[in-house]
Length: 111
Image (cartoon, rainbow, N blue to C red; front, side):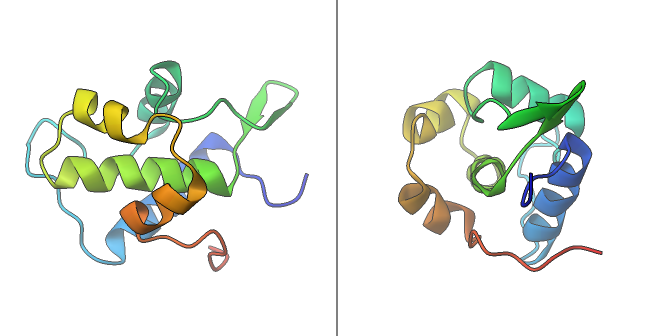
């Protein structure tokens, strides 16, 4: 399946997108960049859609997951709580997520 990433690759892409403009979390309790455990938790609480597919035991994620993940981290950088972010972004469309995340669905490839 082309255009999909493992959870680790998704975390790397999100970190690169967040680093592009220097987004910094205001709370010391919140990580600046997501890790795989955080991505799984966001999926569990509904902030990220379930994986697109699985290759064996490996979950595969796509561009929409990247939009969701970066949008959540940007809202946290603004000082919003997870509950506030859930209310705003639950079931958000790509058109809603794109301006919040400042990320386009067609991103350059990370080497």
